[in-house]
Image (cartoon, rainbow, N blue to C red):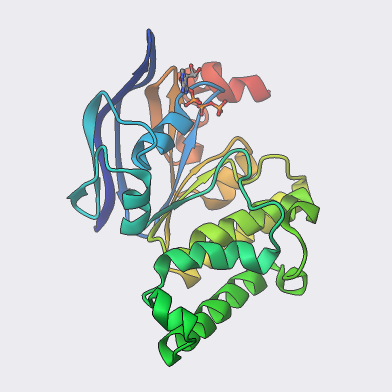
Length: 255
Ligand SMILES: Nc1ncnc2c1ncn2[C@@H]1O[C@H](COP(=O)(O)OP(=O)(O)OP(=O)(O)O)[C@@H](O)[C@H]1O
């Protein structure tokens, strides 16, 4: 197996709160892994630590074999880790195509002069970026809305646009923070198909935080269940969902 992300003994405290307590994870390339658990369990803190927003107090994060612990967010992104946020972060007043192109622009190799003189290198790369953006927008089903302002889109479309934007950066690992939040049943069924499609098409490995168990069941090969920063179970969803600690901590809340 080819491990893409390896986390060993990760700790993060906020004052007296152990937000992450001795967290370990081994994520194999091409898998979809779920992080689940009740509110405040430490899931988003794990994402923020992987992506360099927080420095861990202890532990190690290796991405594709490289130690990335404590790197800056832009360095982690450049190495191939893309993410979305729990609260959607789009450029609200830019249109759909512009939102995707802005992300793609982190990937360009032409320089200011190429761009100013509109030299062939600039034109060629711009064309390729637009084509990829359009392809992504087709997969998301937003191809007819390229000129629509991001904040005019319905919520479900904004979530999909945010994922398209993260994928435009060419990540190999995609972190999705509650992609189905606020979606109705029909939208979350569509989302499951959409995530499967982009995973195959762009050869992604996915780590996702999700509260909708139908979405987790539809996508995740494995899940890790957290409570108060600690891993209380891990395995396939059907294996862990009847675990006593899990039922008490989280799934029990839904019954
Ligand atoms: N920047 C911060 N400063 C202080 N405490 C924080 C900070 N970020 C998170 N925490 C605390 O760390 C713990 C874990 O929070 P975190 O947001 O990671 O949980 P979560 O599992 O993502 O929850 P949710 O499902 O509600 O998003 C909580 O007790 C939270 O209050």
